[in-house]
Amino acid sequence: MVTTTPETTGRRAGASAADAHRGFRPRSRHGRRWTRTTAGVVVALVFLAPYLVMLIGSVKRHAEILRIPPTYLPTEWIPSNYLTMWSTPEAPLPYNLASTLIISLCGTVLVLAVALPAAYYTAKHPFPGRAVFLLLVLATQMLQPTVLAPGLFRQFLALGIDDTWLAMILVNAAFNLSFAVWIMHSFFAGLPKEIDEAALVDGASKLQTLRHVTLPLVWPGIVTAIIFTFIACWNEFAASLVILTTAENQPLSVAITKFVGQYDSAWHYVFAVSIVSIVPVVILFALVEKRLVAGLTAGAVK
Amino acid sequence: MSEQNTQVQLPPGRSAPPARRELVRALPWLLPALTLILTIVLFPAAYMVWTSSRDVSQAGVDRGSAGLDNFVALLNFPALGRVFTNTIIWVVGVVLVTLLISLALAQLLNQAFPGRRLVRLAVIVPWAASVVMTSTVFYYALDPFYGVFNQFLVDLGILDAGFGFTRRPVPAFVVSMVVAVFVSLPFTTYTILAGLQTVPDDIVEAARMDGAGPGRIYRRIVLPILRPAIAVAVLINIINVFNSLPILRTMTGSIPGYDADTTTTLIFKYVQQDRQVDLASALSVVNFLIVLAVIGIYLAALRPMRDE
Image (cartoon, rainbow over all chains, first blue to last red; front, side, top):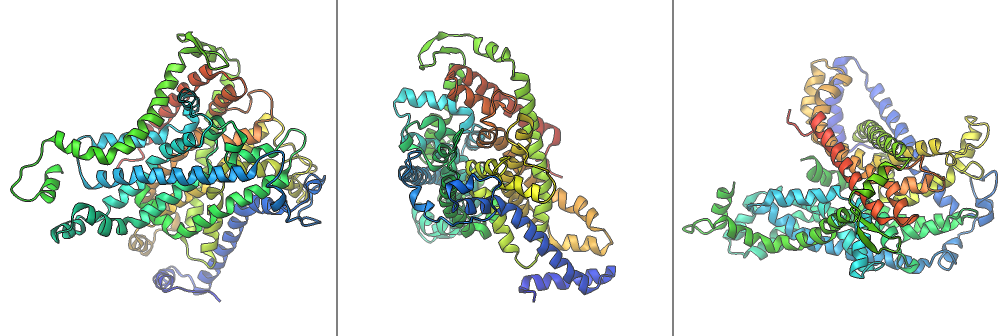
């Protein structure tokens, strides 16, 4: 039984009129839906395949994951990999998880604190130099940490904050700033002027208007910016690789590379750590999936 | 535009403030962002340009001016031609293939069918996942001996025995490009999907009534409307793919030599293996000029932003 929402029914009614015009029978339309579902299943499988390999590999025994030829499913399931991985000689994972969390959370808060006022003001108040400022923000999108890594490395060394969380929080904030400003700017700019004006006329102060009227309205844009920033910080790799040299300070993305050796690789741990790192982010993404299309329309397409 | 705005903001009877006062009023709102950009983006960029003209020892000691010696050393680097060719193949190939697949994928995900939401969620996963982790699982699964993907190809009868995809530069570079396309697809597809929402149903319907086939409707109506979405997706992909380190580092990092390197991975080899920050800085400067040139050529040749 095919589930139909009112929206699709409406569209189908219109479409079947057109189909009738071109000589289609309703049955072929029904068949096409199932062709699409089949295509969808294939697409989903292709996109999930590497992560299924990860999930299955994470519960294999070390000897089995290196077995030749490989097994598709574990002959023996070892979920305890998820417990033993926290204390291995290769990487101090509890510290790495803490690093990832602290860098990502602080980086996101900093981006929000810095980008929100800039996005609001540039969207609502024209001033001389506004275009220059927005161009400058866009230019940072081109200068990514991978290009600047040698310069950043030397700078933090000179300042004495190389190999610290602070350095990585600043780097993550600076390089995610442009996307956050960009998305929030377009949400602010999309608000009708009349809303602000009405509140001001009613005697609200500028800050009151911002807090009680404007911010709630652009909240979807802010959430989109927060989640994007958080995920980018969470997965950052290149700058951490160069700037963080102490194993305890490194994030999970760098830590997992320690399990891959030239002669022996602890793949089961690589995959268990990957799953622990990926699942929360996928859940975060799933929460905004519906808003993602709207957010990108506002941020990217307009 | 500014006249219009001052009318709105100021009580009647006061004249518009001079430009300088408007700028001063704007500064507190912009200062935090400006500070961050200046100290963490522009200063290191300038510092890097400076370093590229210095002679820096492996311990990090500045031994004085080097003039253009670092750039000369780069030009004399025997593998440079190969690295540049690789970089061009990498960027153009990955961005183009990503775009073509994404256009088809977005078309599918824009149709109504049972289970669409789940398929959309599945497509998001490589975007959410760390690129290092995704590359690592591909590297493992493509191992000629214990790799699951290799075994799968053998079981399907496509291969007679496991193939060393990640053991030699050319196949390793090609599978890295496949991984790069894989991780670029979600963002590109979603941006095009967002663009598809702006295609008015009634226009498509009218064209269909007039007897236009689906191919013609797509080329004449949908694609022109998608132009800005495609422009943004391609621009961001060019920047990201050009600067991509983790995929090649994971998939080809254990191969000796520079046959599977792009300029970006070479910078990291200079910094990490050889500790040659001065040479790395020079290459970074060249790298950035190349990004600018590629973007410039893209914008000039295709005019993706022009209004129809």
